[in-house]
Image (tube, rainbow, N blue to C red; front, top):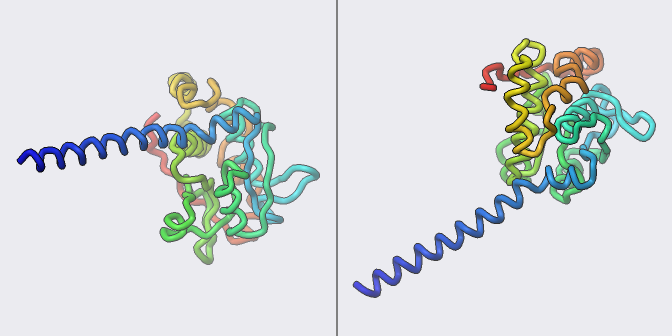
Length: 228
């Protein structure tokens, strides 16, 4: 009986030790990207090379939907829509590699999306915004797995952009979500500034509509039931 109790206690203490390690490690990972962004002063977005409607070189920068979404994230986190930089990659593998190597904070590019891909590559789609009429490609922000705070920041910034056109983001809602946003690591006026940077998702989709339509892309209905 004494040996059995010792064995149980050793398993319990081992489990508690593992939990402590996980909690410390998970917290460090969760805060990583937001801390990195604030440290360097820019959001770094990986974009596809020469994809009309999404990302096309414009001098030293980019233009297209990916650039607009990158600006929204910069406004949300840093309060400055122009605090952005880009890593340009030729294909899905290279785009994913930028996340895996910590060379980018988010991928904003049309990419293949599958269960096996998320499991094997260690990246995940935050929210699908567009889908190709043919094939299994989607456009939306892809981020590294294991960084919960950054995932939440990206997702709710995208939801704010999507719901702005539906009149769901009132002044009271923006004020009420200021303090939780700051606690997460966002700018105090994160909703206001992300909307000011883009005019909302509907506006930027309309801006790039002709090129997106020509490429066979269509909007994915974004949930309108997010509880603010």
